[in-house]
Length: 93
Image 1 (cartoon, rainbow, N blue to C red):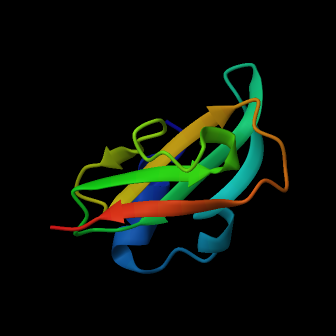
Image 2: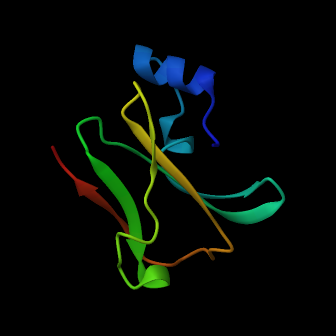
């Protein structure tokens, strides 16, 4: 919901100059809520989730959205504080 078509275009072209601003975890405001936006490039994944202490490391609780044809998976989690440990749980083909 946060990355747009121009970011998709530049990522696919390989010319995006600030991928570090788009991928990973970033605190932001989205639709009136403060939280963390997560994004990861996993083009061959069947499912990607964000897991951490905030969800008891349960990959079923925060499944990411597949941005079709880009290989990028993303999710915004509201009310998540900075500094909480997390990982991406990637389920392959």
